[in-house]
Length: 402
View 1 (tube, rainbow, N blue to C red):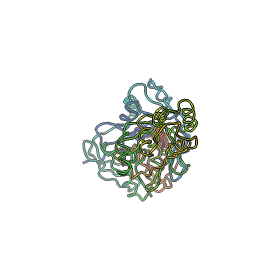
View 2: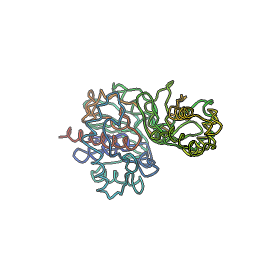
View 3: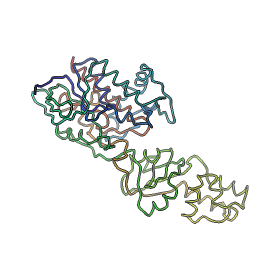
View 4: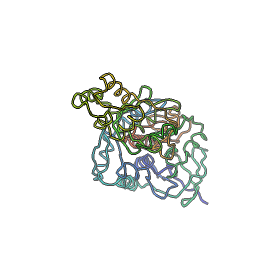
């Protein structure tokens, strides 16, 4: 089998990989991008309910978790959310803003995939799907790759970019291969675990939660000094919803989370006003006017809140409000990588150049996207990191070619 030669090979045809390919090829030598999947951009396709929450207007480095909170600043600052929005608009993709700066396609997420493929085609990138990396070595200033599958070949390249993501959603083929490659080349790894993931509970708590599965409420969820105000959803296995997914990145086993229902409301004042208006109403009925009725009934049964509003003192109603806005629960765990949207941790940023994403010890080796220890909040931040880190590596490769 003869050896093919490329300037750059990118492992992973996801958001970061395709972004990097287009920019590396636009000013550098020939680029090959490979992926074991049958289609490119599968995470893009399923994201945002099929409409792709492709960035967030408020993106800054503070929206990301990393052992080095400053690492992401360079890439995010040099290729911003406005830069990506401009690209989207150049391709005629209509978009809209939802809550908290989240941007979605008006149509389908497939438009973002098509846009990236068009950018790659314009830059003359070669894409090989159903292709696996069997082996990689670095010698004599070049990377020697052995590929299997439909694109089986021997490859020599000057630059090798690892953009194959983390361990999240294994049913889509996630394997953690990028971490193995990092370890092979002597890079340190930050502890990995599921992030942006629903939390699960023991049977003692679940017995009550199952009665209210499907109920949602506005809430402030906190763990330690970190808190998020978004929707909370009760499930048959525990808690989900945007607020829970957000806090899951900060929560650690054996620690509690604190739940404040209706965090912007003065529940005590609402209850006292309700008592003044109609003291004969049952406490459960009055609570059902403030919270979802099934949730109000759950709390009344669990806490033994019975009787009429008139029978409860103002102090008692204030205590009830305190329970609703100071509820502490201990998750048993999470749904794991099966449903986690991203992987927390990854390739330690201490071994990477923040401007180019190139490793400091192996010339021409790059790590971008989710495989790196940079993890965003829910709401388009992780896609922006993919665009920014992919662009940074692409620019770094182009500069290296000059």
